[in-house]
Image 1 (cartoon, rainbow, N blue to C red):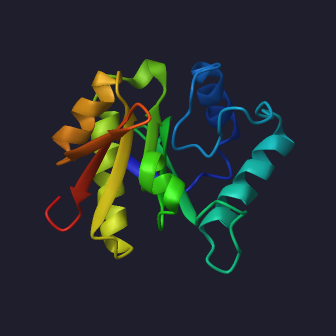
Image 2 (image 1 turned 90 degrees about the vertical axis):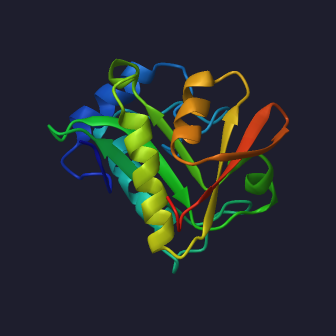
Length: 175
């Protein structure tokens, strides 16, 4: 059984271990983006991470230019161990409509192929429904067969491919 939770103040060590396990690979759903400064794995870096992710979800805090409000979750397993990240964007701008989508997620390498991604995406769709989002867009690289399978298992309906990303819509009402 997996669950989504807000990042945990006392979770510094598991956050650091998870990010180290991802290495230089992409960490979709974490709020860390390619071509940005390296991730600061210090205690101060963790505090900045917590504050930044909380502000991203707060409708009273204007998002940075070209960004939208976004709620960031940790994916936890039965033992409350961090196994991945999920981001739920509250709205879509033009960029997200084309190649980003409402939901992004990733699971740390040691936790893959155990159902975490499927469970997390289903939970993310439920969270979207609770926010009043009727359909969520989820995008995946064309060659990421594992994630495509997860999206399709969760009710994703393929719409198109743009810039090498497959775009799927999931109806939150029937998910």
